[in-house]
Image (cartoon, rainbow, N blue to C red):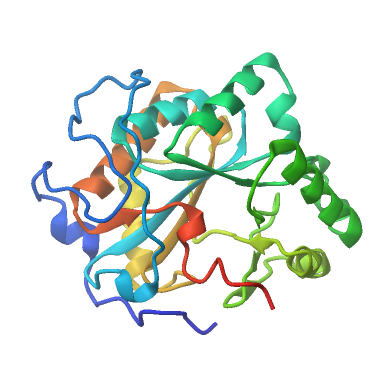
Length: 286
């Protein structure tokens, strides 16, 4: 697949070269985050996130790489823990929400309110039903898929049509067209024709059998390094990272995600952006 924007990554490892840099060397031109790395995780306070200007490829420092932290299936178990981590590190992210989850329980309603009110968080569409967890059947009916996303958009009061398909790593932008399971292609095209900008991911932090984060933050940092080194991103120098709210229920998983973000920050080689700032995403779909 032809790469977009910015050419190949330099033949060097970013994380390895900068792992010993000072903890006070922080990111430039990104969402704000706190300098107090010793702040307790349960703090709910964070400074107001600055508005970040629209980012075109030429505005990205060639020595920087852009990471888009995205979290699926919220509001869910773990959403509150996710917010505590993002508040602590003062780093922005995108929450791909499931419509029915936003009103599924009193706790989910409260978490949805916290997500909406947090300036670090951008909300996006992950369907209303989450395919009823019957993915093959769901994607057979293109009109029903589009209708499901429309219901989610209306019920969540989303202002943009950025979407992610449940159970599928699908991309539909003017510059990227990827379908992981071909039987879903018609439904994906239907979403694009309806004006949805469908975003997949470049790297996923998967769960263990216990539905906690599998492996360590060190292993994930190596995967980030490998993707940039081998130019495996859909768009060069831009990596979309995915995990799920419900994997953040135990202390180990919370700590591992927190350390992952902290160590990315300390390298001074990355900026964090919300998914609406992904290159060319705001173009009118053809």
